[in-house]
Image (cartoon, rainbow, N blue to C red; front, side, top):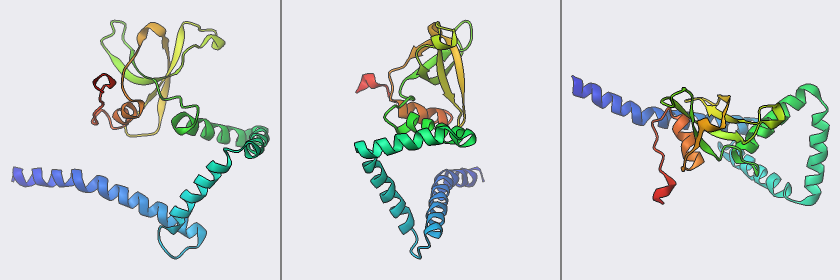
Length: 186
């Protein structure tokens, strides 16, 4: 009986992530296709990827950058829109933009004796503008979610680690079940 249970649990580990991934992809494909009124499943998703890539290409030109800067200034004047737009833009830029912010993984000692530590990302080397020059800002993502916490800690409690930032983020979000390889071994 215990062997049967072990097979069932192993099957869950294989089937659930695969089913969840397929389900989310089907929902995304179906939703985009329904917005565009396309009868062939997946075509809308491919068109969306192409359109986003074209917009990215156009955003690289000086003329388009000027137009986007004007749009940024306009949206910055609208109270609620400013909050939503700038927050979404800053978050995307932090992960994939030219101004990536989650590229410095660190260990932060949260106990006085240094025995308890958390993995985080250094997001600001100095908080002098806030009147705390001896402090830094680190972002601590939560496992299995897209939320996190900003911690303000003394500089001497932060230790940089030699690992790929994307691997560290995956490690944190997975609750510590993925592996992270040190860059020293490369």
